[in-house]
Image (cartoon, rainbow, N blue to C red; front, side):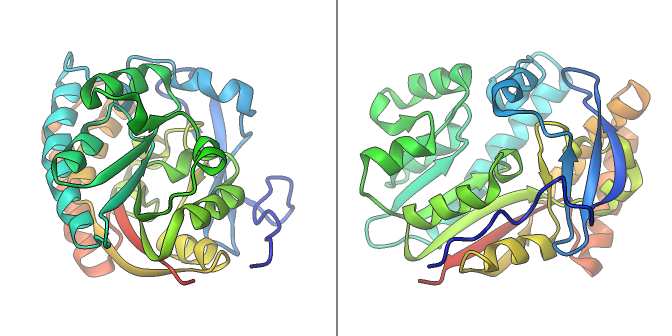
Length: 298
């Protein structure tokens, strides 16, 4: 397979300003979202360097790295997470290969990985955040299930997986092309990537604009549409075989977006906006978040 050049560069003069957004979680800094017309993808600019990126994750408000149940938003997140974990396990069961092997990248505090293990899967997880990884290790009760970086698998293991999952993770990856190439090496021929991502063309994204919580700059370095996912994976010899919605995300993202917009959660308004977003998406397909089933073509 030929090695691809880096597809996207913020120095390219064809990029156009799409929107300016604030980091509402940690720094309160403002970032630009630059549109690449060729791929239909938004790029966060300036992109923090690898050494400074981790500081933008150091917050108790970054819920995927904790098991916090302190605030109403925390409790809603944990309830929805438990429901969606059951749904995710059903999805991967539909893609099971001969040995039911799965790699979950960005496994956070390990709840999904733990459910897969209990469901008879051979599991491995990647989690770079020390705090989240330690919580996951306690649940899994074995260090052999988790590594810190994808390079640990590429260097130390020869195993390939039936399924690789990335639940709201790809948007965090600094070097997109290299990472997709790594995924190619770790996935079995005809294996399946299952990737969940926010969709910046959803109704709630269009409505909340700069306050849309799923932009989450600068932790989200890339912002995808259905077109952009097909574009970048086709270049790496993958095929998008199916796309399904994550309907709960419209409500949770709207709840957080209301807080950013007005300083209050406004649950009634958030529920209404999430309902409208899902209703409109029944016609357009532009749900707040989408799950992509992506097949390894060779």
